[in-house]
Image 1: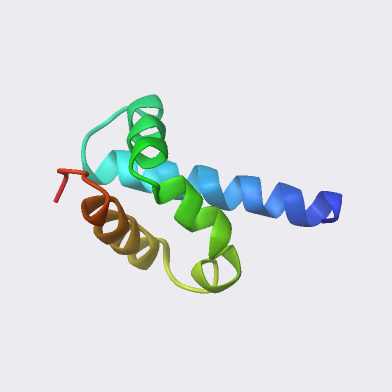
Image 2: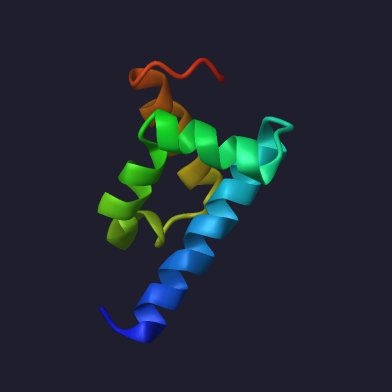
Length: 75
């Protein structure tokens, strides 16, 4: 992976974490921990190629669904 692609991924992940935090009134740290614990970060990493072509709102909706399937309680 090139330096530019890695930088783009990091920026996208940060944007998704921040949007998720804002939606659920969490700190960025709390949002990251939640997404990490309930496999949302794994989902973003594995499906970055498709996810980054959608809106951030769609990504947050996908994260809610994925985390819910893995035991997360935020809706």
